[in-house]
Image 1 (cartoon, helix red, strand yellow):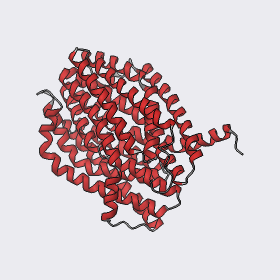
Image 2 (cartoon, helix red, strand yellow):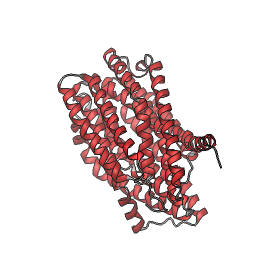
Image 3 (cartoon, helix red, strand yellow):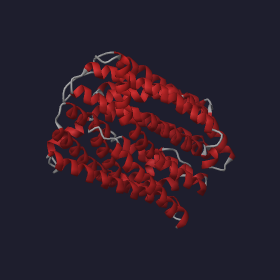
Image 4 (cartoon, one colour):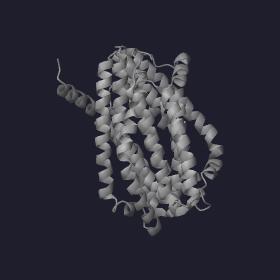
Amino acid sequence: MSTPRRLATAHDREILRLAVPAFGALVAEPLFLLSDSAIVGHLGTAPLGGLGVAGQALNTLVYLCIFLAYGTTAGVARQVGAGNLGAAVRQGIDGMWLALAIGTALIVVGWPLVPGVVDAFGASPAVAPYAETYLKVSLFGIPGMLLVLAGTGVLRGLQDTRTPLLVSIGGFSMNLLLNVLFVIVLDGGIAGSAWGTVLAQTASAAVYVAVVLRAARRHGAPVRPDLDGLRTSATAGLGLLVRTAALRVVLIAGTSIAARMGDEEIAAYQVGFQVWMLLVFALDAIAIAGQAITGRYLGASDLAGTRAVTRRMVWWGVVCGVVFGLAILVVRPLLPGLFTSDDGVRDLLLASLLLIALMQPVAGVVFVLDGILIGAGDGTYLAATTLIATAVFLPAAIVLYRTDAGLTGLWAAIALWMLTRMLTLGLRARGDRWMVTGAVR
């Protein structure tokens, strides 16, 4: 019989095998916008603010479809745990067809809505034209972005986080080079930055398609569209869709409130938010491991293993949160100078980074538990509790805004939101109702 220490070590190896490559892949996503921010920020405060507004709108469109990755990871991992590799790949292919269909529809529907979307974020007359330009160009990258989500979900479910890491490194490198070429060398402005990101995302999607097609040939899975499979992929992620929509309400409200405070505030919030997202995705690496491992353990009907690895992943979340928080405190004096020369923006960003650092241990617990419950297919509970946390955030943020608490008040409201999520997720994880076994939940 294995000792507790040996079990912990075995779980650590399993978690790190998936989480370390996932970390690299996940941080590449916010690095797309961070690199854009670093380049566009030197064009001026208004373009940087425009990038912030457009980035939030674009991320909302994409991450409402995050179920293409998360739902696919959980479903594929369960099939892997049950030993059904062909069915696992087939499920992932259905998700990729759905991603392509949704992405194409979003271009058609989204193009005429761009001015109204930018206006809804409260962008000033100086910022709005830049936001509209970036968003219109970026719409053409949405099919590629969604294919990347679905393809990533397939590979994670197959317990492969290394290939997504390699694709992300290639995509980030291409994005950075194209942004330097289009914005600095060719003087393409904010539109050049958007086109660089579109081309990098589309190239990444092509790589995922090739990798999944090779897996389909290896396991004998059909690749043609299947209406029943598309319907299953669309309906299985309903809880995750509601959860993600509630999350996006918080992020949209934050950007909207910051934009209404002034151009300096939205510029500082844009950079602070991207640093926050960089840390979120880094912590989410353990959550990604949680999705894949939890789905596989439950697919194999191993309840004891599920419980043991859950405890270990939460421990890792806390430790990483503390480390990331300390790292932000150390580099905090240096970060503002990388993004802006505006003294007002620099001061606001310094205050924001202090709160962002303090939130990291809480964030570590929240994102790990969120990933574990996603891997278990517990979407209904996640939807309900995320709605509760959003209902806590909104009035707090509005009150703090109306009492002139400034950007610090906005980040305090975000901290309250995170604490609410930690409480509700922790209560669920302590029980057993989320641990449903079998190849299909």
